[in-house]
Image 1 (tube, helix red, strand yellow):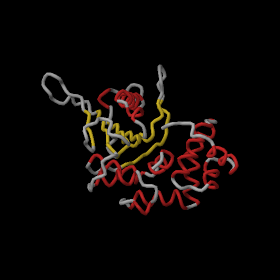
Image 2: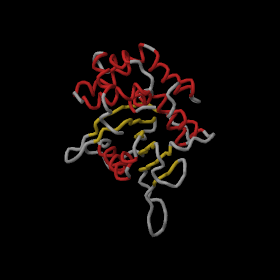
Image 3: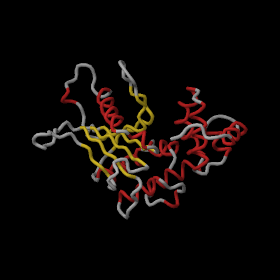
Length: 244
């Protein structure tokens, strides 16, 4: 599944909730989902997080789907964890009000190179080997492993182009809506507006390539990216500009 389509799938709380339940192996009730929000750092680099969700108990989840190994570097996960914390507490609030957080990277390659489906990274006290207990969790999910398990089937679904090939009815329904209905095109347009308004042509071209790979016709790509068919044809006739 391309980045462009994945963002629009995650925009649906039921889809995000389902994915988190499968990955974390527990019941979660998501109350809020924000896609592609710029988390500010007033004294340094800000970060645009793919998906940030909040559950009914106040826990925060940052879900990132990375196509390239470089996008899932350990220090990036650390930075996401820190900037999520920095954008959570309000002025005057105490540190013990920080919510439990989960930074989750789903990667196309096995970044940790141990052949496992999922890796849990936790801070520990070196001398005692006990958990530090800061409630900041980092997980790496290896999308290469598509075993006959709930997690393996989810990884399979995330790499499907067609809804009919998916195991999950929740994900399949959202993909089908996005690809086959006028309502879906409208939703795709909304999340692309930010890119369009910022005038990031290279990003627009990359999204055009992604949507083409997903089987979207040229006319629908043009509508989503708010440009004309001729422009889309020119973009797709050239070389792909951005390697992801």
